Length: 309
Image (cartoon, rainbow, N blue to C red):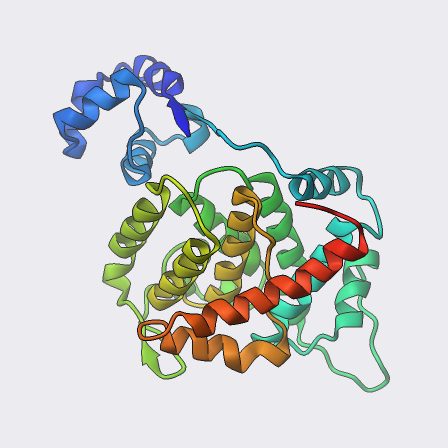
């Protein structure tokens, strides 16, 4: 991946700021300054700090020239999303991933109800059945998250992209009415996973910058790299809630980006999935095997629709 910094220099000129000036203010080294001038790769945490300083979006200051091309799967997802094609891989991916990801987090909507919401934008209820409104809102929001992931599939991972996913997922929920919940931003209160403490709020930003930086600086990517990022993300648990779903959405994006079959975790795999996270430090195989099984579930859908990676 090579980088074009033309937008950065245009923004600096527009705001009458010199490269040396902004680097001095942000504590950016002279070696990094030289990389901007040569068009060499600079860490994304440095780029994002410049974006915050200039109050601009990532795409306004640089363009990534991606060396790999879109896969047939990503092309089909993009085309079918754009033209609202029914019954294809986009349609079925939306329902499969949304139902499974929400269900293992406690949503009481059925697979049929999830499908009904996607296809009709209404909810079908059985007699005397009560529905949690948040389940419906988060189902609709998850559909939008998948759209966002498809649109940004080949983009690098950034804090902004990850926070955008959280904002889309949790907007309009009862959680969003709580000021301290911080929709679209990192948690303000400590939280746990299965009784295990996660990163403290004051440490989250630094750990996320480090995690993303290490991941984005890889020269080649394996499926295990994606799963390792997923594990490390969940250990940080950067948001007040929704971390599992955001983590799986990121993994879906990265599988599309790097040409791997995506995976889905259904209820029958839930205990193995959680065990995999607990045992990762001593045995990575548990989580890897579970996610490889999840790949097989999604591969069946690809085979059914005769789609090759």
